[in-house]
Image (cartoon, protein in one colour):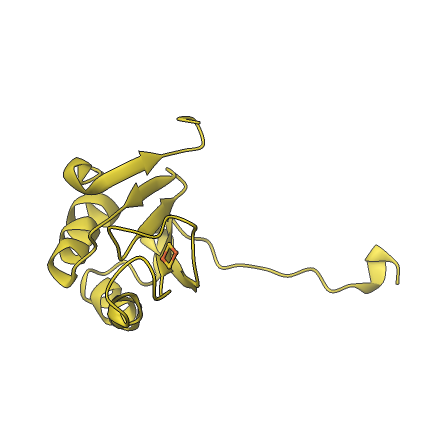
Length: 115
Ligand code: FES
């Protein structure tokens, strides 16, 4: 099949992209899934579910960083958070996704520039 025959996908513009681990090994089983399930409501409450400030989000089954979780990554900054409890997720949304300041005490890696 030629490239011309393949429909080109499109994505609604976004400011941040959250990837949340819902796997069983980085945190208590089900914790990541519960956080992921709460994201839409939390992002909507923060007013960053649509428009130019929109946060896109998806779940990931494992990042290969399986301890201290649940873990999540915020793109495009490549900031990786651990110990993402519901309270810490609220902080990350308010301070990082809305306020553009990473919650440094919850960051365990930033990349790819760190290696
Ligand atoms: S199960 Fe979450 S990083 Fe592996």
